[in-house]
Image (tube, rainbow, N blue to C red):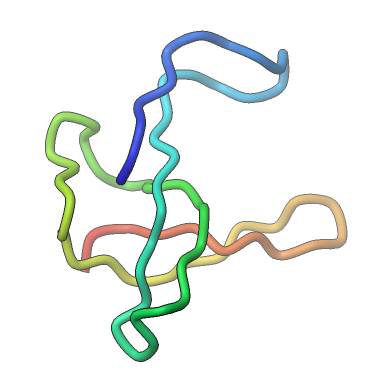
Amino acid sequence: TFTITRHAFLPNVAVPYCAAVIELEEQSDLHIWSNIVNCPLESIRIGMKVRVTFEQNADVWVPLFEPA
């Protein structure tokens, strides 16, 4: 599942953005909450194939997902 957030809840997070539950192909019982990036929001679909990418936030690398 996913949701498009259009209301800024935090001042340092740009909107709109997509928060999604990612199901890993390698282990379908493992799900990750993350963001879909590098994709027009209107193109996001349930079941869409994605791949992981990472973005540095301070001293932590955050996993994000983009279309495969």
